[in-house]
Length: 182
Image 1: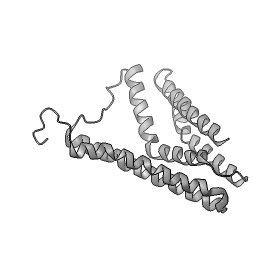
Image 2: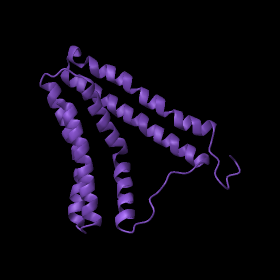
Image 3: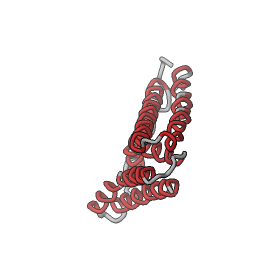
């Protein structure tokens, strides 16, 4: 059941975001756009409530409950950036907006950018672990929540693997025109 809700939430996120941006830039309905874009975080609330209700209702935890926590954590940390990115792309494409921002091409600016992304991934991992620990505490039955603890361990691979990018930019910075330091 939780997997279906995660899929529904992901679809809901993009539908609300798309309708919100279309309302703003194509249909000139700013008030409706604001309401739709403010409703985007409610998708996470639906998923959080569904996970808690499912576990409190006697379900045994599995990887889909862990995925729900990871989804919510990603949304908390990267959701605003994703909406901002989509808004810039949509405005540029449909409303003669300025060229969307691009990450630095190289040099120390790119290295700082990559470390910033990695730190956000670490924060998302911490939030996911906090959600999983909270769910474990709410259920208070180790036999039903062992999969949540296991998921936290396997989820640790993401920040470890993601460290490859900032470390590689630190050790082997990409040269950019006009940067004599690199």
